[in-house]
Amino acid sequence: MFVIKRYIQDVVIKEAMAMKREAVEEFVSSVVEGIIAGTEMELVDVDYVRERDWYLRVYLDKPGGVDLDDCQLVSEKLSAVLDEKDPITENYLLEVSSPGLDRVLKKDKDLVRYNGRDVDIQLFKPINGSKQFTGVLEGFTDTTIDFTINGESMTFERSAIAQIRLHLDF
Image: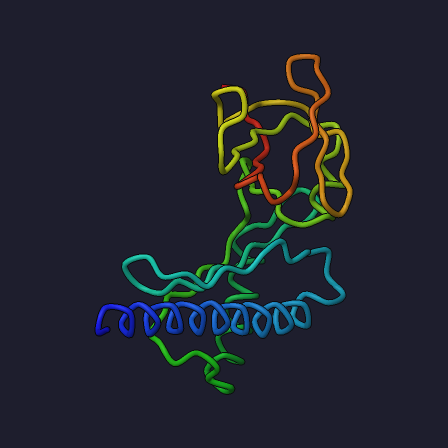
C-alpha cells in the first residue's frame, strides 16, 4: 500500500511541476514579447528546466542573428520584471541567447521558415530499425510532418517525433 501511495504522490508532484514549468514559460514568454515589441527580435523559445540546478533559458533571433547587446538588453529588462513580480520560487539561472545554428524546430512558424531545408529528425521509436533520419522538410499539417529522405517522401506523425533540428554539414 505504501508503494502505491508513494507512486501516486510522485505522479502528482511531477504533474504539478510540469504545470508550474508551463506557467513560468508562458509568463516569461509574455514578458519577453513585450520587451522585444517594436524591434526586429523574435522570441524563439522559453525553457524552464531542472538539470543540476534550475535554468530559465530564453532564445531570441533576428535577421542577421542576435548579438551580445541584444541578449544583455533582454536579460536586464526581464530580470527587473522577474525580481519585481517574483513568479519563480526556486533559485534559477537566467540565460538569454540565440537558439544556435542547429536549432530545434518546435513551432509551426519554425516549420514554415525552414521549409525546404535539410533537417535531422529523431523519433521516439524506431522505424525500419532507425530512430534518426536526415532529410528535407517538405511541409506539415496539425498532426503530421512531411520529409524527403533519400529521395523518398515520408510522413511522420508529430507525436512520433522527439525532435527536429536544422542539419549542419561539417
